[in-house]
Length: 138
Image (cartoon, rainbow, N blue to C red; front, side):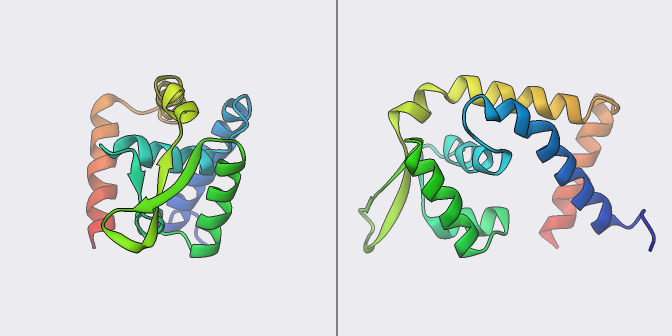
């Protein structure tokens, strides 16, 4: 099997990020996957999102997303609240604990990304982001 196929390299890069990140996030009782959920919520002006939005953004299955959210709820990082735009639905919202940790966690995510991309120049990082974004747009 060729090891230089795009799909294989993308998967390996994702796994490398998780392997690098997990020890850092363990200090906060988080995994890299759980952090990614928080990071998505941090990027929302409201600090909330629908479960389906998380699933679509990260290409996660519904059971996987629910498992991540259940853990984050147990650790008081997120809570589910009524969706004012859909009486049948719930939103995932950041708790005060998660909001108070925002600056620390986002900065830590940046440090980990810098470690992962340390062999790239700034121009190469920008090019990589551009190419991956283009690839994902289809």
